[in-house]
Image (cartoon, rainbow over all chains, first blue to last red; front, side, top):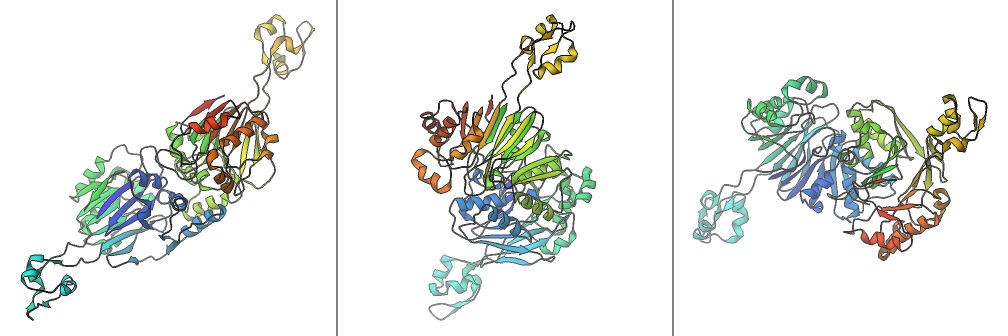
Length: 301
Length: 301
């Protein structure tokens, strides 16, 4: 599981800070999460192949989270993309994009599929044999969802030396991976644990931005491997968090602690600050494993 | 008159090329012309004060000419702008912007005034005591206007030594600047030419992008000081110009020659080319005074 931060700043793009966008690589997927202005250039700068992006998740319709989307959709067309593109976003975005397409007298030359979100409770919005994606309803000034990306339980791993010694036919390997006991070539029942190893633990990533402090998300993100939680303002500016429905690093850390996540990543910093070390130290008073998002930085888990 | 190129490339923004946007400084105005994605960052990079931009002119509703506008409007709000912002653009843009404002449950905290353009003939769209702006109907795949920015005739310049010697009261200076003859303190009529100098010639700038070769613009841009004319493809790719309604450098130069402009600036290059010297040399076979637009470059006239 690899997370690349394309942008982790709030409000306005500047020469040295990008608005929100990130790419999550999980089980061979490249999920794009939010798409502030300039995202397509950051994708190029980080050498992420456009063709690998097939699913885009938009948290909410504030500009710093989606103003780069129409340009990206447009660029995919100019580059003669043919494969489907799925957009998961609050209701309204489809109208924004289709209106702009209509005015340009153009349309995508690939299938563009909108999944409009309106539910106020968590729902599954994507599933295949390896991954599931759920919404995480957040508490912001407008309708906003975070997203939970979960690997499905991995298969058990075959111990090649053990299965050879146990004289098990290759036809049973599928069953072994699924955890079943099988008969060997001599008709003897072999216990699964004797010839397989535990699978890699299934990983998960929860993206929560933008949001005020809200404990309602804890049951959804419980035991998540990595939590990205916004922390727009430092504690000294907590009044701004209340007014604008954002969080402080301590609030993000409290959520991380209560949800027993392994790792917390902070981001969505207000552009009023020049450095971010204080975000880390404030959060560390409550939760130990804290990382700071940074434009262009990748995390592997 | 100063022109700053923020971006002069077509189609898709890349790490090293920006889509179309430029700033024209004329008679203390800062006119923003087109606003591709990333324009607000380029304005910062070129240290152009946001507050000085009061009028934005959008040629047409292809993304590489306006996808940066909604973000700029939004940023002006975040920076607590209070002064009016006027947008001159094809009908439809107002709906795009207002829809996005509505979805974000926000509105500008400054007056945002749209001037929707629909005329297929040239019309005056802005005028004050120093400058006039006219549309230049172009020939592109969708409704498109270029823009002609014209200084009004400048006032004559007072020759201080001459007016002192001629014994003219300062109360008559206003009339002298306007070209009138006046009486001196002794009641003698003084000819205007004897005590004033010719004014600086009025300058003008014509922006023509995007367009196929079209001689219909010549009467409008005749004798313009500076013509910016798109040249998307080299002559070897002229078939693409026909199909997509763009121009070659030679076509741009032919327009410059026929309209007797002083200076031609080429731009809106397709991103398929790595260098642009050939654009200049092709145009120079027809017109002598050719300059190449370049992101971040300023021209003074």
